[in-house]
Image (cartoon, rainbow, N blue to C red; front, side, top):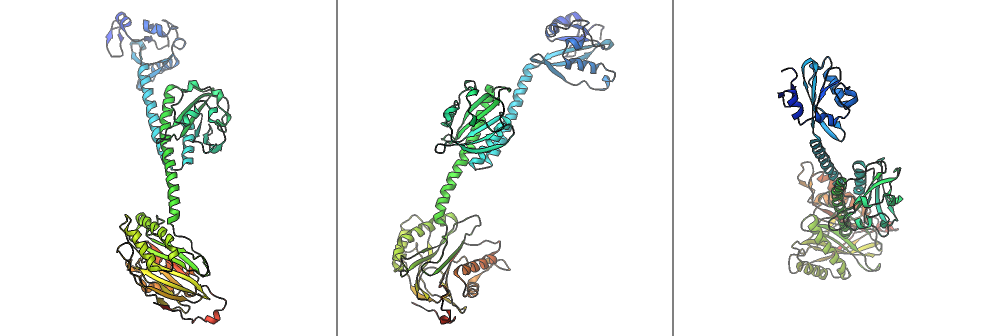
Length: 552
């Protein structure tokens, strides 16, 4: 390179006069001693204090001075020259050094402010996108409204503001709110407050577009909207609605201290994007809560009732759905007490064709119909045929088997009238451990125009039990080989071991043995009802040998 030539950042060389006057970049030439040798017009305008002979440290930015010092030090040639970038006033420049003769360094400065602004904007958008994705995962991980509000407050205070307040629609005259301050603690509470006290809040709760933060006087923010731990005065406020699925999900308040930066237009827009995701999550949580409440209300009528002693007779029931995750299925039972001790109590145990929720729906229909027909307890045949007509006239295509028992106390014992509609025959365990099958047969309901029935009478002496059960118990498959049925004989053997037990103990015992037989295998719905004549004060008169009887 010729003496006195200048090398541009693009690697070309030119005479000093042409280079300095034509270069579009600020150029500073400095010697190893740290003094300015020359600079062009653009550099003189950028660094007014710089002149030939001036010290770099007094006229150039510290980052450029330090870079020149490192480059001209003794071991500089052993290290690659790093990419240099720094600020000069409000703009940023890339510095490209070129070595000249006798250790002189030519510094070409290229304005990269626009590139930096674009890069910063890109980085900001990338961070915001990552935050929105992470926030969506957190918000949608819970379908609980209160936890969703608390998660929102925590995320907003951590990433968007110094403090945040999430406000749900009013419950009566009270506002549910979740607050989070600079310490990260989140609190949820109900307050008596007027939304009109916060500018734009009442409108946000109604779903109207937010007002710009510059229109909100920070001094007007009431104390209830400031989380615990928020110190100092409020300097900037954003109030934005939380849009839901057709119905406003609430509002979000973001707060910054007076010694911090105010919310920019870009930050307000981003807060609305965040609020949209929060609103969707809150709406989903609220919808789930409503559906869960409706399901719980409906389920209350589908779940089997808890049985107890009625008019001097012990009743106990047990139910287990085919799937552990389900509470209802196709098996059911009910007890409809008579009006007085002398009136018969109607016991119903049934099995609807199929499993799961669809079978449970028909179960509910049958139970409601039977409850309405309970006053006809004295005529099983007519009761079953009226139920049959109701099922045939409905849209359901399923059928059911039933066993009816009319129960009344008679002295120290209990009288029964039993009618089967396609169901398994009841079993009676006597006081001495004998098990008898009550032979009653009939056709199922919901399939044929007419139900054929055969009612059988039976009596229970004190401590004797009549067991009604569904086919899920004898047909339970398991055992040592995993595919053997529990079978009728095992049911009768287990019942014989329950002689003299209370009704509840009989149910628990049979249920336990059948479940143990199945183990972890698949099973059908299981339901059973025990009807027991309580022990009397004159057991010696019975002496364990009183023979029950049943007659057709």
